Amino acid sequence: MEYVGAILGALAFGAPVVENIGKLAQGSRHVIDLADRVIGIFRRRVPQAQQSAAIAAQMTSLVALPPEKQSQFIDRIIENELADKPPEEKAAAKEFVALTIAKIQATFTRPEDPTGQTVPQRFNPLKAVNLAITFPTRLSRFKVGDRPPGAEDYILVEQLAIGGFGEVWKARHEEMQYTFFVFKFCLDPESQQAIFANELETIEIVQSKLKNNPHIVKLISCKLKCDAPWLLYEHIPGGTLLELAASWPAEISARTAIAIEQMKILISIPATPTRKSSTPVQLLQDSARSVTPTASAPRYIWYAPRSWSGRQHRLAARFGKSLGKSYFLSLTIGS
Image (cartoon, rainbow, N blue to C red):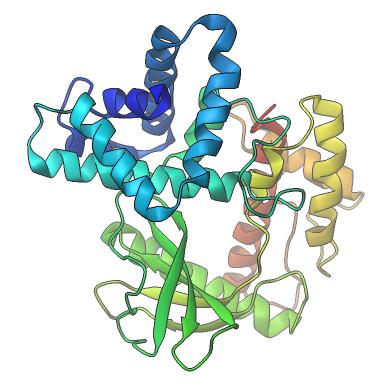
């Protein structure tokens, strides 16, 4: 399995495995650098004419492995690729590969393939920005079966996302079998106040003003004063915007049309735009430009009614700016 071997080789390149994994939480540049190294090693091991088909086939075969065989398979390759490494590095590498396999499946999951066992038509795994989406940016603090601190009547059943900020888990109440929730954990101390507390306040304001808007995921509960602060949301299946966008057509005109339709759903939230003559297209285009280095256009695609307080205005504007960033990314990821 050249692909897993390439991942292990890239993790061990130039520094201990644990150190290289730790760098991934410092920003997307490090994740893309890792993807570049993986692709470079893979290209050296596989004939050029076979590379695209081989990496796609190997990624899907990893996802299809039953958990027990997956663990045994990773162990065998680690013994071949990292035979001289200490046990703690082998353990870290094994967890990283296992998390990568789970993230590959999450990335490939879409309406046409809810199992996530086939590669989306437009997903090019030999492009670093695409491959980077399938890598975790840190190792997990939690595992399946754990109970969140301060919410011990919930059980974590599936990891949905992991990054430098923290982890996102699908969970169920111990008395319920078929109703699921989402725990968003903030494990970065520097982000807990600057980002997490602000997110809680923003969501509270938006929910209180807009009431049961069907386009906003509902916040159910929270706990910020513990060693792993969390927000509890309702669970909405279907993946993320970036995972969806990775399967869109490569042509920028086609991607623009799809992105605008997706974002119009959010634009439909009643609010006062920052431009007098703003159409949804103008708002989205302005926001896409606003996250580029040469931006001079308005920064927000959504703003609060004048009756809201100054802080509510600022939080709403921050919420609007995030929509613009999402739009910009939806055009670039996978294109």
